Length: 378
Image (cartoon, rainbow, N blue to C red; front, top):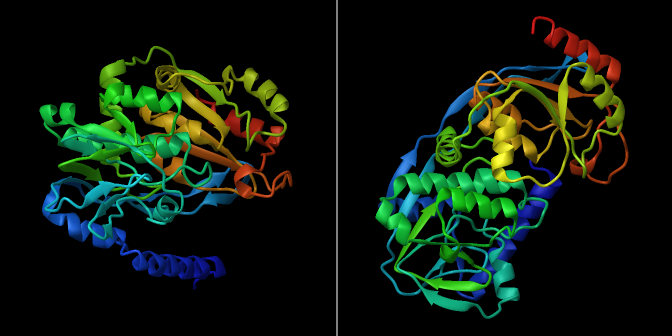
């Protein structure tokens, strides 16, 4: 049954499509885009299906946080698109406009409206090959964080790089709405993009003869082939080695903090946890921290994207607020052959209008009991 918001969203989408048609623009769906690009398919990884088992709530052993879930990924594609028209360009939000058709390789194309409402002059440059990996503006809510970049952009770029001959990759330039973060610059360098080959599509209009595209799959359940491509490429450059087996606690300084964290840290220090403060770190530092972890605990947050650097058998213990329990790190930990636990107390902190921002309460007594059981034979 459709919710009120789903109905409103569908109505707005149809109104936007009708409006754009008045300007001679036709928004293709993801399915229509994939059909259109089918002749140009260069590489694909099939969709996968895995069953994730139930997860007990460590706040209450009689309850479950997650029931058994089927996680189905999408097929991952790379297209080598050589247009048979000269009427083609990349729009500021990163999407490709071919004649009257706007391709949709990611999630939606609604950001194209902003392109027409806020059109500004861009610097034009010509390049034979452009890689266009992302077509969304960053709003800091739906898109724009560390998880989004690593899973939806960096992993896709690694998939694309694996698909291209080295001479083609070295000639291609990269263009999309940049995240403008230090970790983005580091990842792009690790993947193999020099600074002079990186363009912000909001500021530059790249004219090209050939476009390399890749689709985004499931937001929470990325294709394992993409994750392994990223892991393989980054670790080949950084060459991290596991030399320790640390128990670490990942603190958060912003939203979704543990409200009684001082008491929690006092408890964790009894079990020889290292407290990882929430402060800027290089990608290499984050890789080292997670590579050398044997047990990881912390509030649900983007830092857990880094479990892709963990060794098999590492344990992730995720703390949730009472109003936000989502399973993408549960999925990712299983994909990386890790062990997974979770905790969610019933207490609502009531400190935020949005579930995304609510802080977390942890019962120290409950958690101590759980840790005693987990570490009994360690």
